[in-house]
Length: 136
Image 1 (cartoon, rainbow, N blue to C red):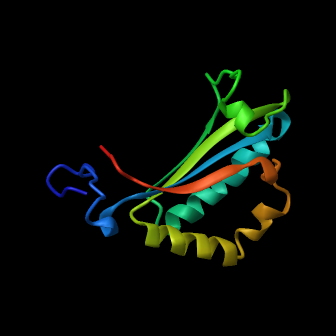
Image 2 (image 1 turned 90 degrees about the horizontal axis):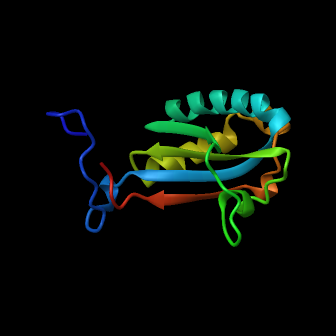
């Protein structure tokens, strides 16, 4: 972060990967009647990930997401008529911070109750980690 402006510096990750931000992205389908349950879990998880070094945490429900003929967000997660698509991401200052947060997630007792009755089909969730290449 720039001390002068308080804004993030543009990311150029071709030469100094240790300064690149890292993003975990998620796409999943949640039954409409379990959306409040999902939101409660997401609120609790957000606090933990921020505690473990995340710089931001976002959960968003589909609003303008058409069902495409070949590809689309709903198709990607095989969303059913009674489900909504959720897009979420967590940003970290580096992959090392992200890796440490994931380790804590797997080992932390506060995460276990959240994992017991997930309000979605985890087999249809898409997720992955991404290195920032352009950032403003």
